[in-house]
Image (tube, rainbow, N blue to C red; front, side, top):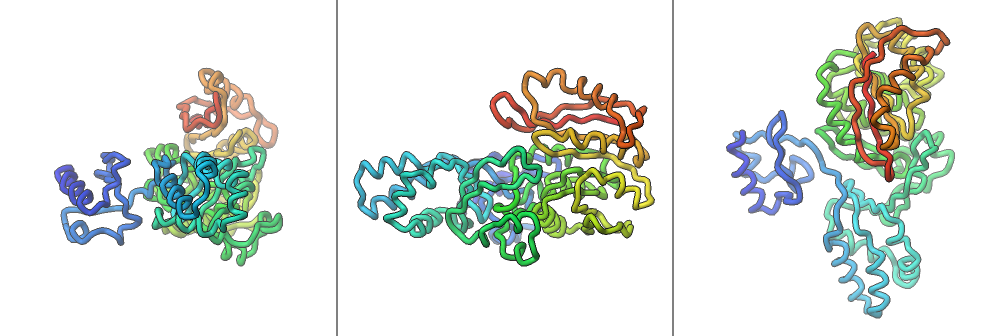
Amino acid sequence: DGSLVKSVKTLLSSTGKLDKSLKIQKSAAGFIVPTLYESLDQLDNEIRNNNKIRPQLVERVVKDVETSNVIENSVLKYLKGIKISSQESNILLSKIPKKYTLYPPLLLINNQDTFESQEWEAHFRLYPSEEFYKQLLANFPQITHIAINKPIIEQDVMRRPFNISPLFGDFGPEPTSEMFDNPTEKDFEDAFWCTVVQNGIYQTWAPRYTMFSRGNIKEKARVLSFKDVKNTTVVDMYAGIGYFTLSYLKLGAKVFCFEINPWSIQGLIRGVAKNGFSYKVVSRNEEIEWDDSVQCWIFNESNEFVNERLCQTNQHFNISHVNMGLLPSSRQSWQHTLTLVNTFSTTNTTIHIHENESVDNLPTFMNLTAVELTNLALDDKTEHNMNIIPLHLEKIKTFAPGIWHICADFKL
């Protein structure tokens, strides 16, 4: 009810709970008013008891935040308290982060030349870092952990954050190769986990073991706009922690997921359960025991086995979408996807190809890729006669200068 927006805004302003850094938006479901609440449980009685207002948590915003003097003021106060020279103070102030990202309860810094710089490390050898970080976190009531994020190794198909550097808080035991590759239930229990809400969907991950890409929120919202998903089957070839899987589940699809990173699978399991969907995990040495009531099938194995797995179900499927969300390229799954659609789908299928692509190649990418898909043989080396129709190229986010993360949609 648009007539209520002004009064709600006034009420939130009077209690200091209106997030003025974001704009009020209109969506298909109603009006989205940004607040500083962490959950619906924190709502003031004036809103909670107003039967005309039906609040719903749409998204816990995750965003890059300009320092806007919060960290700078905290550092200044700290430096004055320890009475060091103005020259040293200025050097340390030049090495504070300009931006940070909040993933409650985690504050993530994207520039390692800040609190891990030589200047700060030398300072922390004289003054305990714990006291400094405690003072810093006094400005962030919902935050208990601080870390510095470093780039994902692009060639790592499991997209593991080997370079995340904890600064403050208990992030669990120091990772080992065995913990990355073959974690135990105790490893999962001891790890530090984060949960965010985007588009009304909970997503969970362990920052030391799996990545989280906030830049995909635009593409997740686009998936939620698809009108042909309900009561169909979707295949997610690179499920991760459920970036796109959870959106398809919310739309009412049955989803087959493939993922090889055990930490991503654990995050996916937690996310699927948190959002109230049923699931079944199948490891490589297990046979499928078909259960039509399962909404999310999670295969702990490479997507090269996708056709073998669907064959084991003895079913045919109305496959509406196949998502191939691996960067820098999903090309290694194209052949499996064509075979999958040709063999098992009873309807037209839209496939979504994620790539990192040069801006110079974007004008011709759709047509050239359609030709490549048309000429690509199936897994059994036979030709196919599917018609490949270019639908849409979505520019998701810049990956590097002149390079875009894109999603290319084709109808088969």
